[in-house]
Image (tube, rainbow over the protein chains, first blue to last red):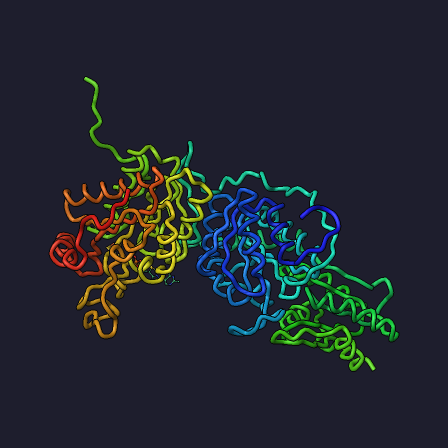
Length: 353
Length: 247
Ligand SMILES: Cc1ncc(C[n+]2csc(CCOP(=O)(O)OP(=O)(O)O)c2C)c(N)n1
Ligand code: SF4
């Protein structure tokens, strides 16, 4: 893969972004629709001099990533919904130990084994993972160049804040091939930043530890407060969203992320042709969620249409942001259902006539 | 006349006093590991993985780099650390609940991949930390807080012999079962762990040392009686000695 215009699959873009960002440890277990990632990693990672391991379960993948990260490497694992469920324990440990890593969920339909069609069924899990009082950063790409860019950015974000960062994609973004312009000239800003906390052998110093267990009275409470300070800093510095179409003073706003946001851009054109002006609010970070920006945008419109490929998950955050439930109209397709732009437009038309 | 030092606390131990119960095998094994790391000159190039179990606090006592791992996952955490730092001495230290129950998949696949690691397996036939519940290694008839009538074959099957099982894997190079009940057995245990460390440093591959270890608190025994119990009862089902050694 080179710089410039090229036809590339979403899952492959993730691999190349990780390698460009200096990821040198990958562990993963097969699951559709993300298999191209471990398959491509199995030969691309050794080419770059890194370690590829086909883990024997997602429990093993995430704990290998824990170990690699503790040892100071840039590490990644990827999976799809059921596999991400198995990783919840490890994600919680990594949050507690403040270990950076990049995780990718190429979502499919659920619950249970569900199906292998694209879905946004794991929004709740992505923004409220694991046990204990913690957050991870979650980025939601909506096209293939963002699959590359956000994955690339995720490694610096993870190191900057010593936090796991999740790329929340879906089967459509993973499988889709697009002719995209990739800027591969970027250098990861923090790749060579020192990691004094990492376990590299106690050369010239006392032994150090990576732990989440804090049994002294008050120690864990203090750790939680320190984590919270970090989370507040992330909220302040890293909250991202895209707002489109507001220059035409639309009467209605669509709120959608990932694939649904992409489909909604088609809906906006259909609506414009029918004389209905809409704007689009697309959260890029799902955690931290862009509450303030959405609140401001929603003030300017009569209604906020929330579209998701689930039965209403992000809509809970939209309600919190907007603060006026009467303004909110939700439409969702669960179980691997992918709405068309026309279908979403019909829903809007039904509510605004 | 200049003083001659015949014994001192290893540099690989911190000043913290062991918090394990009296007569607990963990203290003995922690100490011999620290002595060995000093003897091998590896304190500055060792990374250990502590378990979830009573030895979760190992990092309070060891003065070399140590990470925790989620319950049972230590071998795969160690795998990744070793792959990132292939020149370092990396070992996991795990109890029998951690390794033989919740972490069974992790230890089997790590052994089968033939990772160049040393695994130290502390078999005290119960879950020490959580109050003495039944483990997969609990002896037939042994009373624990979750087998108050004694372990029953019909319901619970037979105690798992991890060492014999792992020795079946082609890629496992060295397996030995030892005990720490008296000076002579401690010296043997130390030799076995040393061999496990040297195998790793020589690139020989996966080594597994099982240590029969007393848990006087949960066995409801005095320390000496607990050690006698290992010599007289436990080592009958789990015989000590070399199980596999491939150069
Ligand atoms: C996922 C999970 N399940 C259960 C526990 C509770 N737990 C802590 S230690 C332990 C058993 C430890 O026993 P063992 O590995 O035999 O070590 P010992 O304490 O005897 O040295 C258990 C079940 C836990 N921490 N995490
Ligand atoms: S409970 Fe058992 S294993 Fe744990 S410290 Fe006490 S004696 Fe040792």
